[in-house]
Length: 146
Picture 1 (cartoon, rainbow, N blue to C red):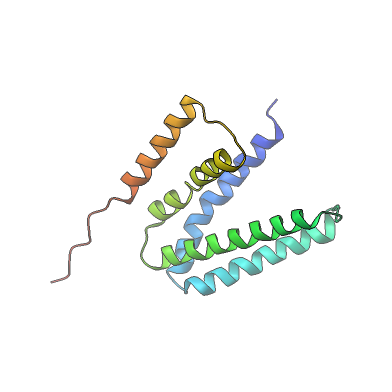
Picture 2 (spheres, rainbow, N blue to C red):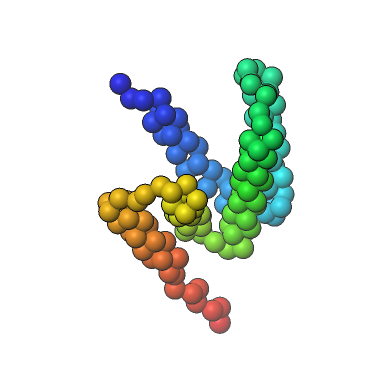
C-alpha cells in the first residue's frame, strides 16, 4: 500500500506543476503585484475553509507561532518574487524549474543548523541539480529587432 504522504506529495506536485503555467499566464495579462494579490485572496479563502471545517489544536508556543508566521511570510515573499520573475520576461519552464530548486537551500540549512548529514548519493544529486540549474538558465539572448 502506498503511504499517504506519497499520495499527498504527488497531489502537491500536480498542483504546483499546473501553478507555474497559471502564474505565467496571469503575469502575461496583469502585473505581478495584482497576480500576487489574487494568489493571496485564494490562500485566504483556503485558510478560511480550514479554520471553519478542520479541527485545530490552537494551543501552541510563541516560538511555534512565530516560526509558522515566518514560514508564511517567506512563502508569500517567494511567491511574489516568482511572479515578478515571470512578469519580467522569464519563461515559465525556466523560472519555475529554477525556483523549484529551493530544497538545495533547505538541505544546506539543515546540514548547518540541524546537523543532518548528506550521503554520497544525495551529494551527487545535489551536484546534478546545480548543474541542471546552470544549464536551464543558459539561453541565447533574443535577436535584436532591426
